[in-house]
Length: 397
Image 1 (cartoon, helix red, strand yellow):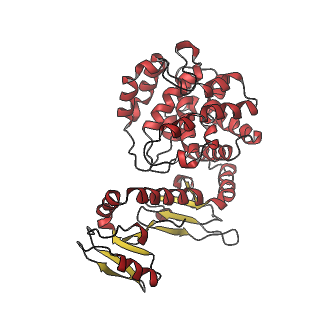
Image 2 (image 1 turned 180 degrees about the horizontal axis):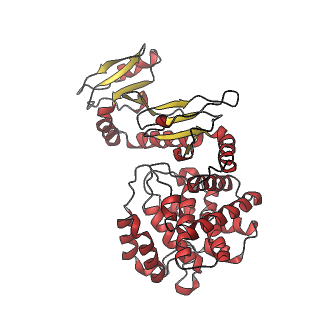
């Protein structure tokens, strides 16, 4: 299905099919002809069937409102055609997710040529920032890395990874590069859950993070991904892994346990690869049936962990990350000490990360408010771990 909404310059585009018939339009609506935007409906006029048919005969499929009226018109669509509008948002969100990959602009070094294109999404438009290729590599100037998200085509992920490895070999590596290469390998694991080679690479990355975290007290600020609405399972898993390792360092786990905790937290949601994207990306509350399907991701994660022949400690941590001390968790409704230690750690971290993660149609909580919810639900979590977690996050609040 073609995307239903998009932005062009100072105008916001909507498919004609989204317009409700016989209802007064809250703002001016435009058509685009020969690069010019012309008013086709004035504020207060109705979108009629005759107009719709006339547009169809002229092969006009998109109408526009100004960006200043975007919010007014979105609220209008939410009132009169909510299902169609929600579907259009999900369609746009899915297309962007499947076609492009957001990279960390701090990883781009102006001194090293790029052999792949960069795209800029500044919230208003989506444009080529750097037109480069393997045949025609180019440098990116620092002043071009302005406000907005930098993306690459997913077909260029191999070239981007090679670029990062080149930075490491030339001694230009820093925590940002380590974070980005770790994110890429977790993404690869979520694409190929049973690939043991990727798991070995992840283990090496975890060792690097542990070594860095042992020396650098502000490991959180260096590794946590700052998110907007680009929710991905692998980004969530990287953040859960980072927070879990930080908590593990705080409570002085030995290096072997830290490594296992890192693997457990990175793979805790790997079973979501078996769940329909229609459920994982649904806007709004899941139905009871959908929620029951969603909860099966825990068992699916355990199956994958067993197929990878991971240690029992890792499997138990994955199996228990949605369990609650009061027995109200899932899938086993375990209580107290029946929940594994890794499961108790990830239960806290996962809940916090989900509360502070923005999604389509959902605002994130601040770290302070998220922690207050965990405190209110203290019967669900190990109190000693929760207190340490709160103290650890104190500098981020």
